Image (cartoon, rainbow, N blue to C red; front, top):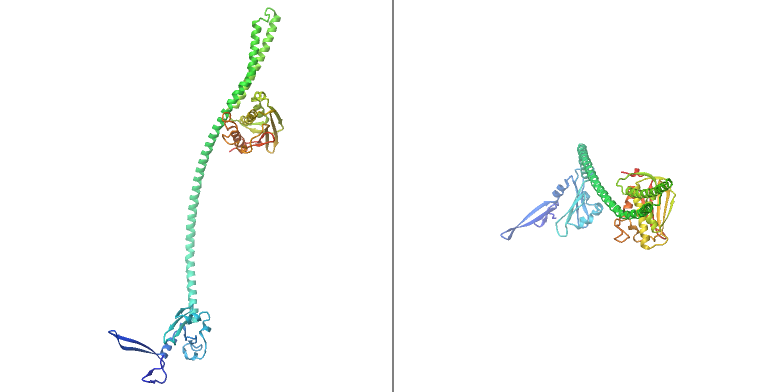
Length: 453
């Protein structure tokens, strides 16, 4: 900054001048100096004409002069009247004054500062601060823009919302239709697969049932032979006696009395033979009925199929000195497939008989008891054959699992018994060890029609 000192003297009145001097070179040699002089008064006048900013000129100590229009005269932009305020920039910019003084260039929220280089020790900073009315105008303009944008967005959003709602509804209906079609197709496929698996399981179950019955058939044939032995022996004895008496001419056919004795004797023997034949026929009928392939639902007392089962193996039980104790306390009749229930009873009874023989049990005994329960009847079949090991008792109803050796056991008897009770009769079949043997518990409902598919 200079006071226009020319040729050794100061021009009056004082006219502060800013001089900008730059050298001019020619062929690498400094030839001239270009001097630009700017009147401070003109510079401040131009700076003060702004209507956007408040202008601060700040020295290195933070003191400043401020261009700010007079409240009564908006066109008054003089800097000079503020020279004696003795304010610092800290009072006007308490949060940013350090950044303004320490940085050559700094940009705040509502102002911009830049250092003006004069001399190394006299550099000042100029701060341009947006005027409050400008800020208010910008805020108002921004509010108007936002309001206008919201109105436009709202106007556009209403039809767009209807369009989106329509499109979403179309998509939703299409997805629902596709989902419904997919679910129907899936249901068909699942139903088809389930039906296929059910048929496969039924066929497998049927084969295993036949296999189990075939295994029992061998035992039954042995029982038939055993039960026929006594009637056949009696028939043979009667026929032999009759033949001997005829051969020895024990009867006097010449007298009427002798003929009557002969007739009475022959009638008696023939009646005996017919009785034995009736026993043979009854045995065949019992076994034939047991193996009938047809399955008919009947309403019976539970003791009826049990008595038929005991009759089939009666001679076998008696020949092995097995005592059967029966306590039929149930008073309710139930729906059941009698031949299938007989198969379950025979499996359990035969297992007990085989176990007695394998373990050489003395005082062999089977206890049978029926009792009424809620909505059904329970039957207990218990023996004193020593029971089953605890580590395998849970496996006895598994297919092909047997406690017998390979020669005598197929492992299907109790498995098929479980199928017959659980699936065919919707009942329960369980086994538990007792103090001296094992006890099978069967619970059957009064009716199984309500459980049918």
